[in-house]
Image 1 (tube, rainbow, N blue to C red):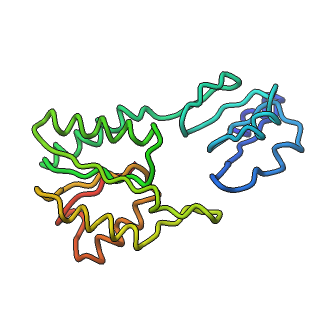
Image 2 (cartoon, rainbow, N blue to C red):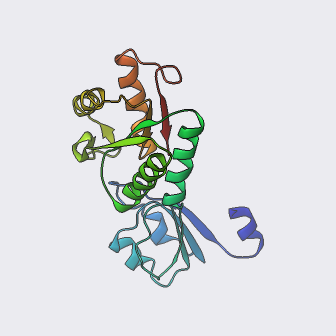
Length: 193
């Protein structure tokens, strides 16, 4: 993409803005004709880029019409996940989320509605304290995840499928399942997005 833009005599920049990290200063020091931003944009960044053609990729659409936004269809994502689970024979599932922003809850709601419409059941497990966001990366707190899975284990009927609200949960969830002696694909399936 960058090479194609350069060939047209223009310049632009791809910028990744991880949550909870300072904004890279290079987006403010170079003369560019446009910026593609991956990640959430705080007001400070938005003000500095004001007047520069920008496209934000991923995340919640904030209704700000200063730039274009490309993201996923959360409702469709939840529906596809549920249809996949149903096609694999699952009727009882659990939706697991570390937080409840609208974008995650919409996919969980549509997942649940689709599963229930097919005669299944779904239970939501949401724990905002499961994530430690104090550092530069999101870390899942093992004790909180273990407590959450104690609740999942108490559900009757037992879920045979877990739908994770975000990929950031997947490594810790897989490790917790293994710690409990459960095998993905044998004891239950995990769907993540």
